[in-house]
Image 1 (tube, rainbow, N blue to C red):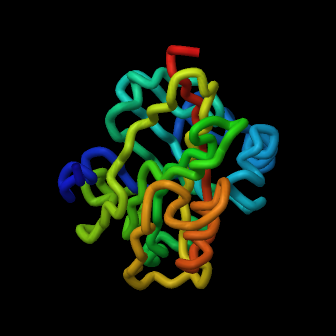
Image 2: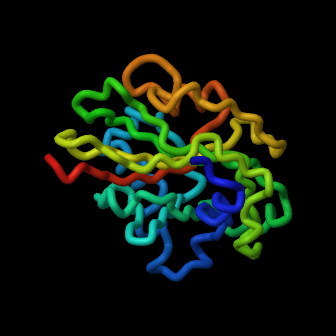
Image 3: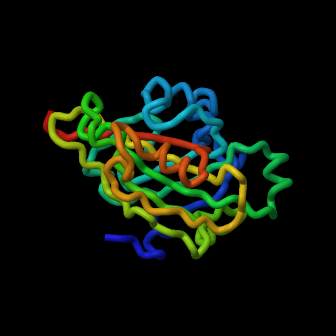
Length: 233
């Protein structure tokens, strides 16, 4: 079932907040120890290179469900992630740069969720599986109200498909990725829907997000992930 525009606005909010504006215990820079450690965690988890090439993080993705939070590699209960999460994008940019860009229009953002471990990490013949894809997310200034965090043209390309790893397939990695246009354009994006969830419509094991993003002219600017597994192991 596709989300309506209103339900998508309620479940994902795209507002740029600087880490300096948050309390220290809330700051993702403290929690995740910054850009270098994020890349290190993604590499140790095999997300680089299974899903992503090395990249420079420009945004932190804070992911919240009602009873779960994505903390860059924590295990969540499948039952707790059946509904779309709230997503907050937090700017890594220095305060001086944020100030100079305060009234500038930002490139539009695309959010994806992909599983590289289908049906299992040891046997990824169905992966990647596209679990969510939303685009035309317009980032706003830190002092903008939450309700105006998105433009009215947000497009839910692939509705949220909740994690559902099969029995006895171990832990799956569910990877959230933020992407922006490589050329920095602030014009509206017209992205093609993947031909299918499995392999994102491409061929070969663990093909998907990387190939789709390349074909759309997008680059990765942020990532987060969780592990989830079926209770029957």
